[in-house]
Amino acid sequence: MQEEQNQLLHKIQTLFFRFAMWFEIAMSLVIFAGVIAQLRFLPQYLTGTEALGFGGFLQYLLEMLIGLEIIMMLCRHDLDSIVEVMIFAVTRTLLIMHERSLGMLIGIVAIAVLFAIRKYLFLSGEEAAARRRYSDHIQKDQ
View (cartoon, rainbow, N blue to C red):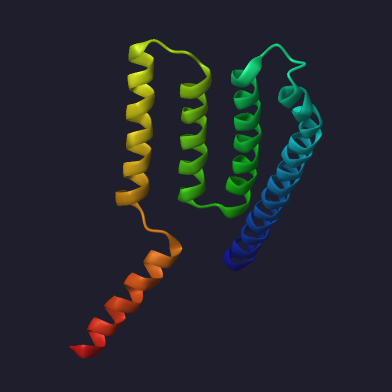
């Protein structure tokens, strides 16, 4: 009886996981379609028919870039993607929103913290594999 309940629970968990995975893919496709649809407005920013100038152009490009980074974050499921999205979002805020000195300082500190997290607090897949090979090599020598 207990085994049957565990199997049923496992099937339900697997079903929810698959649904969540497909939902993430669908969300990624919607975001990608939105970015592609917005590309048609790019010439307006380049030709100057919009009165927003370079700041508007930069804001537009950074928003599309953040959208693409969110797609990558949804597809890759790693900490590096999340940190990259956060770096782009803070950078966009610093470049577009003309904050006062304190807001600018907080943004710069936030970017520095994100880069420190990226460099010191986690390993990329390649670095982790290299460390495993190195530790395996050391264990063989002992």
